[in-house]
Image (cartoon, rainbow, N blue to C red):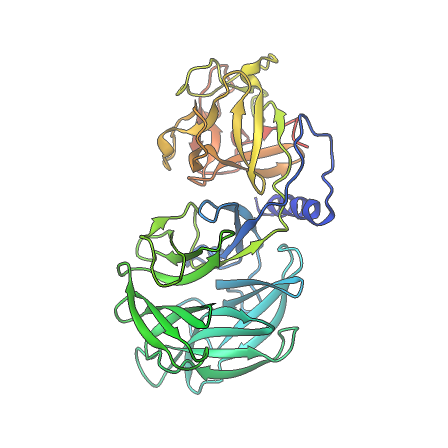
Length: 437
């Protein structure tokens, strides 16, 4: 549900900003403000998916839903968001129409809390006979804020080119440009720029070959660009970069051919590892911002009572691979669960009796996959996001699959097994966590 998700995020952010966590904490550990990564994206071509979604991660490779903000901007469409944290606010620049609908501008919005977004500016392309303006990407260098947008004209085919727009004030309401990126030829889209030492690096999709290309310049953002070659295989687009806490660079690309975000790393922006999949259910083209302001919250211990039956999630015994069940609440250690934070409202869940972790069997992403207990290993299929429904009542959403823990067939009987299933409105996917602070 969208509104409860926002309430949950509001509570998390308030705790981070004020340093306060309300409520009584059972066996509590202090809240932490460890580095987090926020991924801003949209989810697809359907009307309902063309809005700003936010995901969070502590490691840059496994993301859980932070919020569906419902923000679409004045055009009613938001795609390809580029996010930065600048002068105490978050800003996103974004595409304002679907990829089949003509557009002559891009939009910018701002937020102080990642929840409520306000329109800041509409920036016209400034190019005669503009047909499309796609994927505006922020590039901040010192006090200068730039946006690089891909612009195509009606007067030619296959003529996308990257153009640079420069902010004329700190409010980002006035923009100069466009200035062409000299050297970067026709039919290039999704240009993302970073700088290392004195060298500018651009990662861009060649819309003819469908490869990601690496370009460099030692002159400026707008001149001197030379092609350093292609990366990986064709079928990827929307490259974006984030620098990790250890100084390495991580690139994210949208595998638009069959879905999913993929990533690779580099120490110098020149040599890259192979691509691997990112755990980010439903994510598309977007960008990552690193932040220290999101709290992971405290650990806590609680029962998990199925709302539809009033019965407790039960490990039954201490055997690994045993499928979890619901049983009449009895106060046993097999019905007591330790929630250990690993991200924003994201936890591993450890049984007090067995010391084993709640686990989606085999890392499956399919409906009806068993929810079992297994030796704790920190994998994404042992990580669950708490999606707030009402006070103390949550869905348990698998980070690896995006699906909800579910009591099979909404049974109210003792011994009914737990599975994962597409999240819905059923009360057999809702659990009362009385010990949650």
